[in-house]
Amino acid sequence: YLLVEMNYEHNPNEALDLSIRGRNSLIPRPNFSLLHNFNYPQLLQQPPGKEEALNLSINRCSKPKSGRHHCGWCEYSSVHKHCVVQHERTHTGEKPYRCTVCGRHFTLSGNLARHMRTHTGEKPYKCDFCDRRFTQDSDMRTHARTHTGERPFKCPICGKSFNQSGHRAAHIRTVHERCQPYQCVVCERKFGILSNLRQHMRTHTGERPFNCYSCDKKFAKAATLRLHEKTHPGSVSCSTNYTDSKR
Image (cartoon, rainbow, N blue to C red; front, side):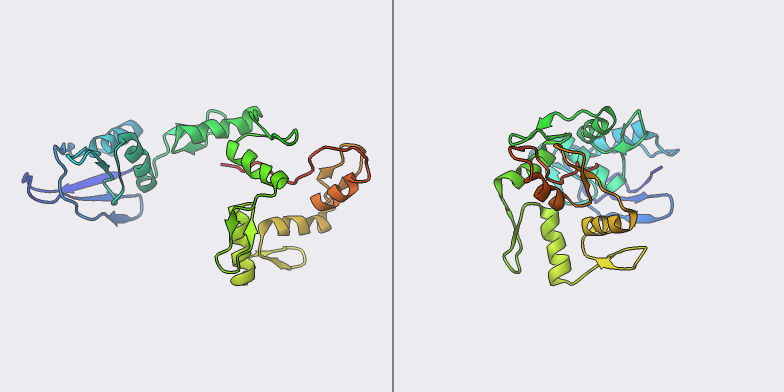
């Protein structure tokens, strides 16, 4: 729970000093001048429940003459109060939206809606180039780049381009920073990219997750499957190895 401490005298010309205390630590917040028409919340006599904490967050976001709502914890501001309320959850850790299936909590209702598709199996976004479907529009657009060849993410050091921002980050980490944080627990070989470690682990486990749609052959690598599919004339199936991201 959260305990809000307020130390002030009722003087509208003075700053209001608030601190937010978690279970094990006290996180100071900077003083800020009182906003126009700021409503003093009542001092809480007991730890607030989720509803009370949400109401306190909403009441704290006052709108000054400038027409913008301000975050009570940092310099963030927005003309929309709900944007500030959502932003403040990054400070408070509040996750009011709960999955009724697995109990996982989310800060935004949209994130919960996307998560629910992992339970229902719904994949409303279809690739325009093949039959692959995805739970999220962003995953579909990223997958489509494997067909178009688009590489919008450029390395600022060497200029190499990538179709995913994560691939660019991994490139910088492994090539320019020479970092290899992922290690095989069997042979202790190290990798800079997690997907490379997973692919390597199949040499130990014998897993072959990539199936040919034209025959019953299975492969450990997507690239090997793509080469194999060329032996089947007229095959138009998409063998791109792309997995829906989990959120």
